[in-house]
Length: 122
Image (cartoon, rainbow, N blue to C red):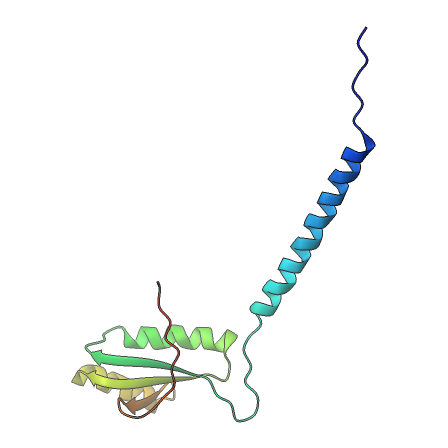
């Protein structure tokens, strides 16, 4: 009659060790994620501006500003929205002036020196 195989104690201990290491890594990842998702809060005289360079016709400018304002409200509460006129059409310029007048955004001409960080999809 054949003897049943017995799982060695070292295999069980190794399994528990791997399990607890995975738990520790998951906890570290969760903490890193929490730090990275924390809202940016400039201090003192610092200000973050979201600059939209607009040229030509931009019929969806108002929706874009509204969407940025929603994100700003939760993640960047002190950020300003700046619409930079880079040769807007007359209708788009009037829309931007209305938004600037209501306090949704600031309208500036396309000239001047501004440090911008450009984000792209790829």
